[in-house]
Image 1 (spheres, rainbow, N blue to C red):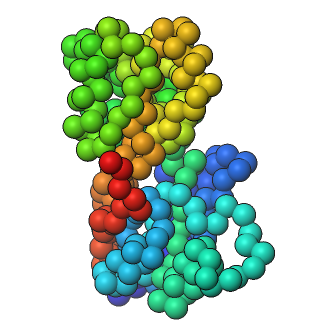
Image 2 (cartoon, rainbow, N blue to C red; image 1 turned 90 degrees about the vertical axis):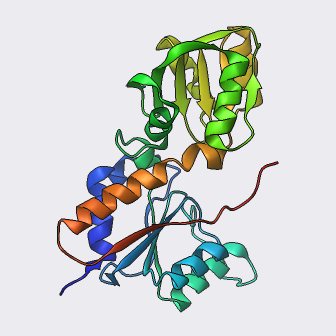
Length: 258
């Protein structure tokens, strides 16, 4: 029985979130490997680390799909004592290919982490504003400090709040990763607060001056919800072709927040 290939899975990703839509600074797509390589097992992760490569080898996965690209710019020296060249060497030595889906998947209505997070929080009437901002209505208005504590529990991570505690939040916007500039889009769309992965100081200052609230949930915690949805979609699509393939979610975290 024929197998899926790196190329066929790359094509599926391109159908869901065309790589041509990625931002100019991005480098999503095939990072390491050959398109014709057979694949019977795929591992999904946010970032590529040595632990993720080891996990793929243990699972006998021939392909890793990460959200963040390993290669943003061509390396000039393959010094194996450095992180990126070392990871490339580990992939090649273990015959594991690497695909990254980054800002293209961020713009996907079905697989964006922002949409997944909005659903996980239980927002109602979820809609989209611009490329990266999703917003929805809370079932009941929440005071800002209560909402922060709720987000801490849901994300299982520290959440910083930029703004006053006495504000009532009815509509929450979400823009995962480092997209605190999305506060202006969110405010214009009727939200009172924005949850994002990283908040820049000057955005916090500007938002506070307009009475708008920002929550910083951390890059990893706000993006992790996208992986299960991608795994389900990929597994469902590949199963329809009747080829044996297993999709796994990485259990590795690149760091721990205190």
